[in-house]
Image 1 (cartoon, rainbow, N blue to C red):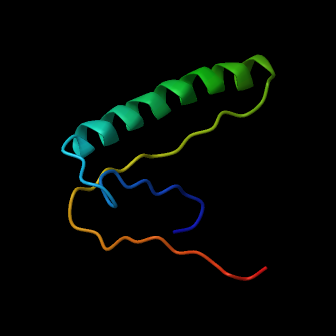
Image 2: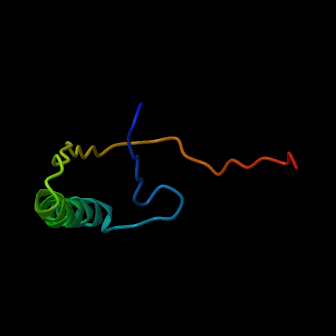
Length: 69
């Protein structure tokens, strides 16, 4: 996946609002990016940009843990 974030809504527990939650999350991230880029511009630093994709469908998900100590 490279440098990225994968978020699952409703994967381990049923969530009838998973699509709405995903869209609202994406909009909140975009708003935060605008605010962060304003801060970067004020410091004469390059802006950050990225894309957001939303997919709806089946997924195989589970909890993984390590017993290495």
